[in-house]
Length: 135
Length: 381
Figure 1 (cartoon, chains in turn brown, orange):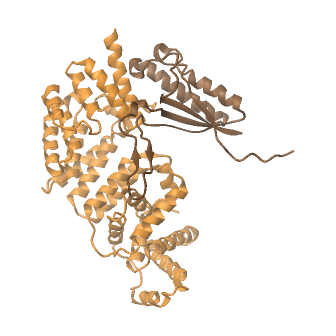
Figure 2 (cartoon, each protein chain N blue to C red):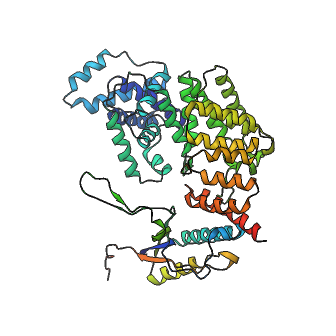
Figure 3 (cartoon, rainbow over the protein chains, first blue to last red):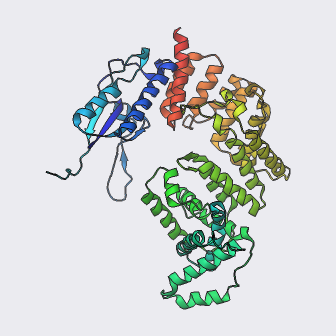
């Protein structure tokens, strides 16, 4: 088993196929979208592949150490140019193929018009110690 | 074995040990040992004075643990000076523990953790689960807090308002997992109200009860927010509301108004209304005026703007809002709501979407996004 991080972006991902901002959906479409993601997580919990997931606030800052005795540097008011993660889910699956398969399924969450969003999700394997070889 | 009895005795036993000069952390270890012993012995041989029993065992454990210490002599002298433990006013030590746990040298999160541990008697694991942090993290937070207060004198009376603030923090954490922090905060505030005669303690207890009574109706089964006006009032806990109102009235009658009493008065007016339309908004505005006088908090003035919007119409509410900084939390959400009530749906939809981006919780963000979506869908058709 290996862990993968699925990342959903507010900004910075290539445009989705069904690219309509959420406040332009109907309330029913929003509910259907939420339900889809919840069902997805519930199902992975049952298959033993779900680890954790959280949503992130839309605004964040880049921060950097700026030398002894000085406050950290932050990147200032250019938030709209940044790549921003909207949320993440950690899964623990047998193969990279399975991780890609699940990300594809999550990307099919319904959006405006009840049609799949086809949004781009980032799939990142965790760097972990190699498993013990048992031959 | 009555676990609740043990939990309720824990703080006063701990308080006795600390008052006798035991270091806070060492005292807690000793009390834990005594509790384990109680679980083992009591089912076969229940003591007549459970607290006295626990004090005796815990104090012995404490002495055993510190006997090898360099300060052995001093501590053994201490035990000679102490009267034999017996029935003692139980509330006194507990009260001092409250003050110790809310000591100003602690950060709010440390104060909360220490209060739940020492006064509430919760296990570190339970507190960690409630705050969704690893147990090791919470254990560190608590032991650092203990070190911080280890040199603090135990006899100085503390600041009641700090204690109340800590309890309110616990209450507002709500719950997750196996510990309902709101219920725990109510239990502790009840205990405090028994120990100390202070109208603001009563005010906070009333406020918690009035909020808690409506909790079940505040979220839909799918976790989404249900605004006050749309809540099923049949699901409100009327017993808890009656109790809260009674406590509040007794406190108000003493004519020493404070922040929590005024907040509870607003909550009581909401709880009192048979329907949302029958809410007495005029009186609510008056209470917000009192609150503003007591705290001068911008958040209070924001809430007041909402109440004015209901009492005198959305235009009046927007005029109040215009005087407040837009950086206030929920300012945009309030503006959206008032514009919608004023009939400016286009502006309202835009502001709801903007407010969603600033929402502090997922439930609130989804709620605001849905509001925007609802208006936008209506505008399109």
